[in-house]
Amino acid sequence: MKDIGEGTIRRIDWTELTPVVLLLRIFNIALGVRILLLALIGLKLTILFNFLAGISFLDPELAAQIHQGTPQYYFNLPVDQLYSGVLGVYSGVLDTPLSVRENSKMFFWYPGVVLIWVVCGGLICRIVAVRLTVDESESWSNLCLFFRKRGISFLSAPFLVMLGIVCCFLPVKIAGWLLAVPFLNYAVAVLFPIPFAFTCLTVFLALVLAVGFMLLFAAVSADGSDGFDAISRMYSYVCQRPLHYAVYWLCCYVLGWLGFLLIQFPIYTAMELCWKTVPADYELFVRFWANLFALIPLAYWFAWFWTSSVAIYLLLRRSVDATPFNEVYRVVPPQVRTLPIIKPDAQGAPEIVPAEG
Image 1: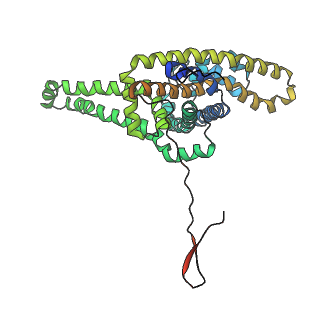
Image 2: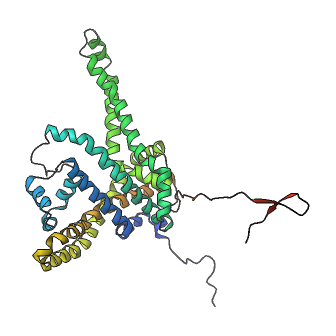
Image 3: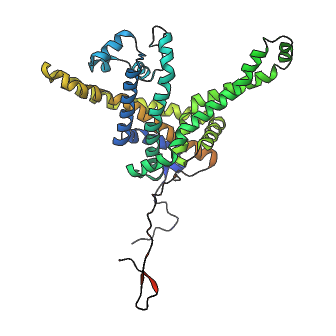
């Protein structure tokens, strides 16, 4: 056998050589059974919660199609309209503004939707973090254990940022009230740079939160961070590597559309063929499964979003903190230890009985 020498290159680690290739694994991981299942559960719960809250973000014609339960509307509806209709994101779908009654419902709608995706999105991020770092599949027991230990951080991190934004805007609001008070309005006008500085800080905090809130979940999933550490990492990574952050998301967006086109055609084609072969007497029974399967391409976008968030976080963490890709927070299941058995010996003195085996 020929000795090839110790300095010979046997394997190339492309992730260390060109870290951006990590984004190429997003499509494969996002189509994982557990990740796609969690995304589908979160999507279905969001739609159900919208129905229970009595809030419709689609125009009347699309809402009527959804109410009829015909899966064909998924085939002709643009993805951005369906996405905005599910999450309530305004993107030109609404023809009229929400009424006062619907605005009052929004106060209860936001916490419910946030709680749904704190659970589903947090579990997806944890699965992706373990898969991208150590290439292992996290068991359901470890997922539950991790969420029991760090689940509160998924909710506390965005809450703390929102609390900081409110506290920064409070001096601006107080300055507005003082402007209506005689004699104090002159002092407020002279000290106007102070509330203006708080306004700039409020806008900065809100802007970074809007473009980087997904990094909060990734930080908790990959590093087991608490709320304050996750916030610190989010602002540090976004502010220090804004161009990297934008380019990474652009690459993920292109790869996401390519992946969506690959799964959209076979699923929609199979659904069309199956729906045409179903007799009219059985349409009611098949409608539930048809609508559920038709949501798979849309659930892929949610799986892609959370998977991309973790991948981008790992790239930014390596660029800013020089942290290797294979470092991830691990949860060790608690070990149950029993007390040793003590029995008297032949002389009556206590002794420890060794355990069997």
